[in-house]
Length: 208
Image (tube, rainbow, N blue to C red; front, side, top):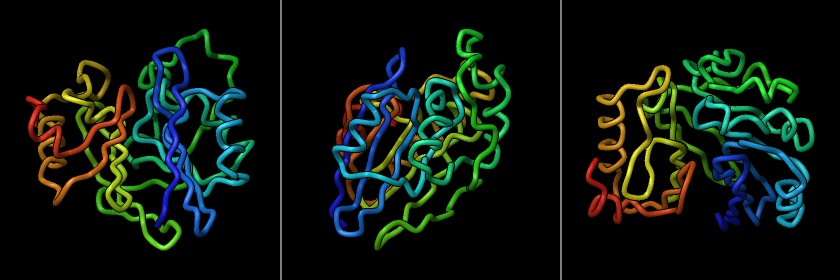
């Protein structure tokens, strides 16, 4: 596959919303739409995207999902989420959704609930689901060829926090060590901050 990958920094933190299109098939997906506005829409249009195949959620925190309903209404795409994370879409205590965002439309359920080891067909390949709990109980990473969409599990030379609802430090450390053990090198596209590689993280990330 020859992939076009772009990032839009969205929302107030900001969050990386990753946009992916396979040039041969025209298939496309988005990862973690933390906000929806004309900038995100324009980026998709420039990539030639008219219809998404998937909207992949690495976890259910509101800074990764506030744009979900609007993106889905405009571009479609099956909403994909780990099976243990479903409640985050409707429980503001879990998602940490602030009352200030009460007026935003909400997607109340996922179309596809996944678990560790599941695969999603995409173009001539497949997206592999890696359950990586720790930041939340249902955090996942998505692996497509040599590209890892890491959400808030793994950052450049750091890892996600574990002091929020359903977070667990021991689980997070186990999850990032599992990522470090993946064969070869991967381009790592995190939920916040700059991209990195597994080779870099194995060498410089103290948690790995």
